[in-house]
Length: 225
Ligand SMILES: Nc1ncnc2c1ncn2[C@@H]1O[C@H](COP(=O)(O)OP(=O)(O)O)[C@@H](O)[C@H]1O
Ligand SMILES: [Mg+2]
Image (tube, rainbow, N blue to C red):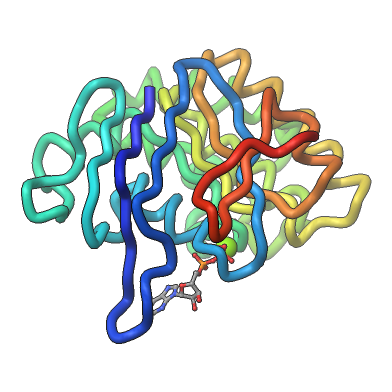
């Protein structure tokens, strides 16, 4: 599903954050990505998501190359592919504050050209899945942290992405809410047959994944969970 080869990222003049990273993720796999703060986990996710260019290397998603010869993102095919096939859950939720819960979850569907009828049905299904049926018309500021993160999960999965990227999705939540969100995430990933990368500092959260890896000085290495 995801093949990373010799991937290097540098913000000059600082030395590279990581260099010559190799990493492969099979279709349907759910991996926890761990590592020290500052190791480059968010940067790696951003490169995979097309939000940040690489300095060098190769990145293939579902057999499609997503970096051009000069390691920039290919803006046509790759952008389209990402919009359709990638879901992103950010640490700080990133809900759109002026859109209600329904419209936040509907956003990827609108961007992908779904019909109004299909959007209504799919958002209702996602609201049900994350237990927020009664919050469809609420604005993000009217929600608790756990509710906001459930909306973010519903939004990231609404368009049935092939690849889900989750950057410390429980970082801002209390342990009980975090455990609920992790269970929900795992269930929804399985239901969607999605491949997923979960960035987390939490041993407990990492255990919900199929395997864990660590990003550090030696690159991406397996890590026991
Ligand atoms: N836009 C940027 N410009 C310069 N340095 C950056 C930028 N983004 C991240 N960094 C640096 O890259 C390193 C890795 O950051 P990050 O990917 O956020 O790590 P992690 O998510 O593992 O904590 C940090 O030292 C950070 O300061
Ligand atoms: Mg980070």
